Length: 194
Image (cartoon, rainbow, N blue to C red; front, side):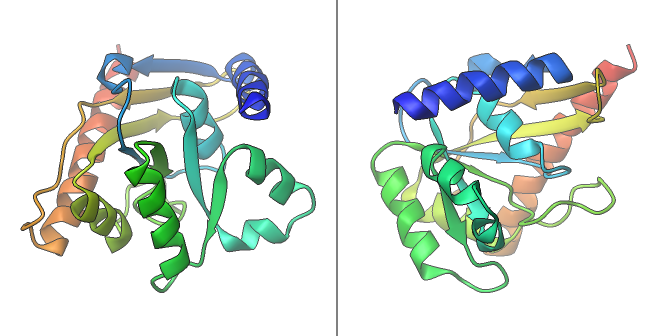
């Protein structure tokens, strides 16, 4: 964990110096217990930024293709990232996610499964719904708005945690997940017009 927290502070410092970061709702982050953090996905900066604004150690589900790049597997090991094969159910990634949640730890997931080409939130994939309904753990929604760029303002609005009813239909649950995120994006955008 020493390497994790060292990387955490290095990444946090660099990103907070490069971007103008505005975070609201940190009081909603539970101090302990299993948690799935969910956010819209607009940029490759989203995962490190979400990890940097939270004060709890997190695990990242990361597309398997990134593990073939030089040096990234070494970094992923220390930032608790693990691979997922997209496009079909990845049983190994699901089992690993369930183990993390059963230990009362935190996973950061981007329900859309990939970055949005337009910047507009897309439909949630079923994986986040499966994990939340299977474990009964809380989901913590974050809406990301603004523009990444040197000294540009990017906003992270954190909403209150919620749970998915295990009896809720998968499609309905997927829509609820993204609506919670969209609501926070709208709130962040409204802050930017003040």
